[in-house]
Amino acid sequence: MYDITLFTPQDIAKCSLVLRQFGRNSASMEASSQKIVKYIYQHFCDSQTGENSCVLVRLFKTHPYGELEDSLQQSARRLMNGKSPAADMKCWTLLATAGIEPQWNSRHTGVENTAIPLVSTEVVAKMPAIAETIRQFGLDIPTVLGIEGERFLQLEPAVLNIFHVSEAKGSPFIPEQDSLIIPYKVKSTLTFGGLLRSGSLFAVVIFLKVKIPPSTAQLFKHLALSVKTALSLSDEKTVFNNSKTSENIVKSHNIYENQLLEYQIASLIQLLDFSEQEMLRQAARFQRIIDKLQRELADRKNKEQALQASQESFPGILNTREDAVVGVEENLGMHSFNQGEEQI
Image (tube, rainbow, N blue to C red; front, top):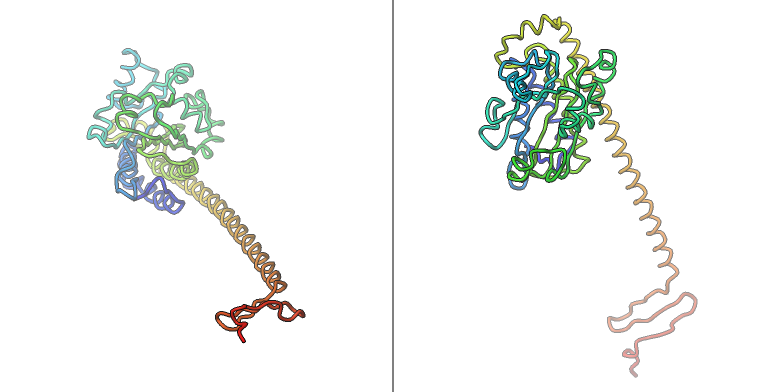
């Protein structure tokens, strides 16, 4: 279990290790995605009460309309008033979901629009949640709608980012105010994700009962890389459960096992780079703490030396009997005494 309000680099390392493994022994990207959202939903909690911190966790992926399964194509056509999008049109596609309501634990139940067609730059710009996610990830809408090969090769390794809404209620970037944010008392949202080598954008969206600081939100860039590694094992190979077109997709993209292996190696190298960067950041932070402690120690020593010097020059106190005190100054002899002792 992880307390997201007290999330530490150690928690990130543990969680990342688990999430990366979900790509193994999964029949499809959808299966891996469901494991990912379920794990996040079940393991993020309040350490004091044990209460779940998540209201809902979703995983989205942009996917060409022509490669969607039938039910998802129907969802896309419904939003286009029955018109069929072009086969290569990207759709904002729900792959997995987990939440407090029973119907929120399968993409096949309780969600009306599971594939949103990204028709044009102008249309996407009017979708606040999607448009702002793209912008926060450091991308632009035209790039996401139709990535050029050379530009994508430059972008793909670097695009791993977060989109943090610290105040969910009233946010213009969360349209589900009346259906989700207000009735379920969602305090904040956190989205993390990046680009897959296929050109698809993926995003994990967490609706939280608690608020988290920006510094904690930034740590989720590391989880984005772990999720990317897990999803890459099925990227462009078998995306959906029981996909009838998976073999054709594999052939059309000419994906072979050695190419997949190269992708996994590239992802692991990227993970190593992230780990080393985090190690350098932590080392710098520890060095700042050490420097601060050393300065405080030196300052304390200086104060102690100054205090000792002042005490050496201060008039001494000579104790005689319990009720007799005689003040003495160097080279001046006795200058006062307790009159109670002056008895003849």
